[in-house]
Amino acid sequence: MPAPSLDGLGFAPLDRPEHGEVDASTFFTYHERDGVVWAEYSGGDIVRGHLIGTREADTLDFRYTQLNRSGATASGHCLSAVVVLPDGRIRLEETWEWESRPGSGTSAVEQVPEART
Image (cartoon, rainbow, N blue to C red):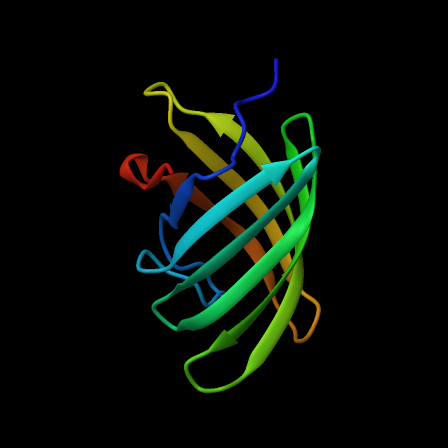
């Protein structure tokens, strides 16, 4: 059975991965409808970021683009596994790679409970 919808949920990274720009002060707001997922994010070194892609069962496949505080833009591709934690919150376990520059890695973001809209 797939995890619940991500629509309206807020997420924050657990840490800053090597080669990454997001950190615990970056906040993501996800949306989901009919197999399409998208999100806006900002905070920390990120002025503004967007992602868009698809969800099939508990796998997200999306592209992201962002602007950092130094004025540089960057983009990449990410596959995320949607995992329901024991307390009912959702974790997205991510495998990503930059397409605009060298670098790749793994990371995780977890649902911030009070962010649900």
